[in-house]
Image (cartoon, rainbow, N blue to C red; front, side, top):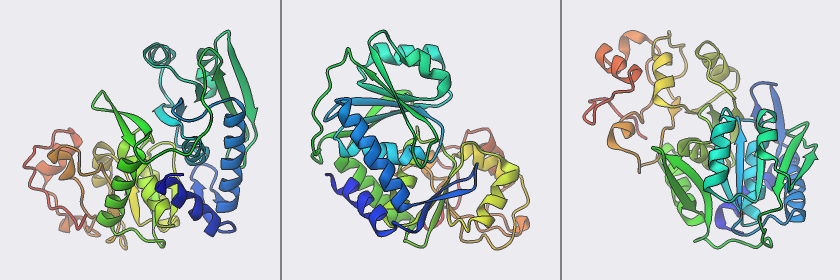
Length: 315
């Protein structure tokens, strides 16, 4: 087991009776024990379907509670997670299926028929985090025996700037550790995950928060009018939110008491103009905003120059 997945497993074990993950849509919290049970069930099913070391598993889901446990189960088998937007089209899914060999698929109900072929098997599971989750196994693809991955093995394959990027367990461990240090995450922190898990910054926000024993609140879609109540009601300290969404929040009145809220964009490997958006929100009074109107407009247009002149926070 990699250092990262070992830490994630220990996190669930230490909090077996405590809430660690919340579904913002249903307002339901899940304990570490409930998540660990789902990880075990998913591992057993995938292993039985001969999905193992080095196999690629395509995941096309929105930000739902089963997502983190699915990722962990796939990693514990030594397989590779390939996240795809839950809103992807049938045409895009078929294109991806032609470009890469996938041993298995976990997709939304709308994409299920597109993922199933004449030689597929379909397995439906009932989990704590999902009333029904469907695993599609392509029997035309030879699977591998589950095995403990090395730190150099691939773990996550993302699309960054329309180019494929594969991260090993060692790279993920490094980036997670950097995220923890940058944002000074501790077990007392709560992260609101708004950015889709197809994005690298969302994966790091999720993993880093769990890595230190914190709690995560997952939301499937961004709604500006609901954002501040979600932050307040759940005592959120950190938020994974993309710059364009952040622009909408800057147009709203900022409630008091949120001076310590921090946003978590992409890791240090992203372009300099994106890193400039890594800042702390400290504007309980809009008149004390750190941003001028032109700077806000630049964010809204998603056209922030490399010398944006914005004041970064401690992170």
